[in-house]
Image (cartoon, rainbow, N blue to C red; front, side, top):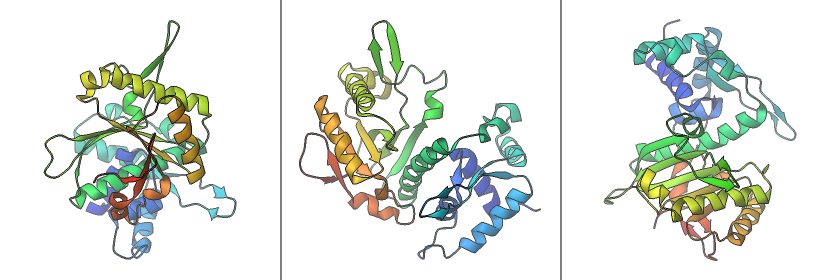
Amino acid sequence: MRLTHRDKDIIRAIYRFRLLSAHQIEAWLFHSAKRHSKQTVCQRRLQLLYHHGFIDRLPSPVVLGEGRQPYVYVLDTKGADVIAAETGEDRAVIGWRPQQNQVGFAFVHHTLAINDVRLVLSRLSELGHWQLTTWIDEADFRSAAYQDRVPYRMRGARVTRILPDAYFQLQLPHQDQPAHFFLEVDQGTMDNSRWQDKMKAYAQFRQSGLSEKLYGTRHFRLLAVVSSEQRLQNLKRATEKVGGDRYFWFTTQSAFDIWQPEKLPTHLWDIAAQETTQPLFD
């Protein structure tokens, strides 16, 4: 098999995002004005890369009422070789091992939802709405370099670190300073008390000055992307009960439409302690 430039783009994207569904790859690398217009081309390249050992695919779950879901793709051995060759790094240090492909459905579902957010933000960056200048994900926060750069809660002598789903910066045109965000993508599995502990940790992170020391700002927003409108109202109320304020913003996963990213800047967000909704930027 002779790798095309598009094939290498697919391999890089899967490495960069950890895992991607066929639909995400199509929307990101085969996007066109008409949804699914290049689906066959995308599927053919994915099948070739899969059968030649560059990428692997995870078992496709069947969701009641929705049937079989699109394949989810991860890196495979030859794909890791491509990344190592391009970066000049040894295969052992590029951050991929075959064991990383052994993940459960809950992890896959959550990661895909996070990647929807990242893909839309990245696409809007390409379109000139802003520049996505920084993206730090949970895997980074688990590393030694970042483990002391996260919000935390004290329970007696015990420190509980809060690992955000992501931290990112957006540089808007004609703005001197970037906008700072922490991201929490909720799948409806966390009880309210645990969610409130997280929100307290973010508030303390700001009030203590740690966020300014570590990230250069006290004015970050916590973006909560949740599964449904009902869940949104539940978590918004829970956040307000522990003092959540105008820095806690809520929306549903449908706001991050990988096929229509331009919808996001006009989408209205719910804000803690406020009755009115607002777009992400005025």
